[in-house]
Image (cartoon, helix red, strand yellow):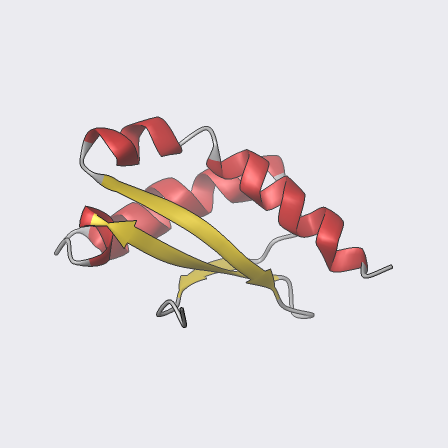
Length: 83
């Protein structure tokens, strides 16, 4: 079993703390993967994908929420959705 699956679930659960704030502004976030380097890769959805403040939201909101709940995570980065 892939040990990163549990990390993915933990990161997704940590994102639940910030999702209501993102949804209030018409956005959301989806965790795509956790790399071997403990970098969580997320996709910013809806209004968050095009917001000029998205990098601040990512670093000051999303990354902090994830690191607080999943201290193994070293960084959270946004990637483009491949769907």
